[in-house]
Image (cartoon, rainbow, N blue to C red; front, side, top):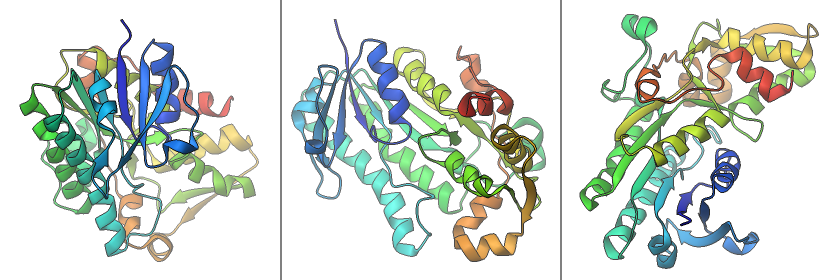
Length: 310
């Protein structure tokens, strides 16, 4: 019997890898979007309407779902953090969760598991202990903007458990993909032969290859022993300098110049968002590994090689 996965945020960077993986595994996918008319339905992938601001959703899509993967949310790094943008980032996550929770409460459904995105923004700047061992899932949420946003995000899906549905939350690190996100931004200065290291480059980056992230969503969906929050990061975090130079060598060979971009320039360009670019966050992947997940790209060298073909 073919199972159906209802997906939010499925047309984004992660969805471009995850949806084909699910289809290859025999799942039927329904992608929620405000503009389903823009897409062509196939036997395995169909599009259904929802509108988070209006709190409307295609109820037939909800009743058809065996599983839900919830990844919707405004891009954290897409625009400068004005007060309005920060509210939009938070609301897009909590209000989309509320819409799904309400739809499941209203409709007769057969959903067995609900896999929700969260983020390592949950954690604050590194401490002496985290630099040695990495932040674990037991670490409380930081009281800064991203920490409180992630806390509200995870709390917004908590009612799912009261409906008898298994709930898994993946706290996702910096996703490396050729289809968007951080890696695309890291590559831009390299087109001019510049390897742009952020400040002193010593801040730790907890990252994950998009293929490993897609596999982790599938693992969470299919593994009935998984409940609660898990860090979706590779086992070997690296500092910004190492990441930047590894990418530069893969893309340019030796034809690049490393340049440290001073913190004050980043603050001028990015505003408040520069805090996150300059923040060091070392996050542990041990819990998901203990549950049996195996990374295909555990270190930055193999990940960058796979993404650049070099």
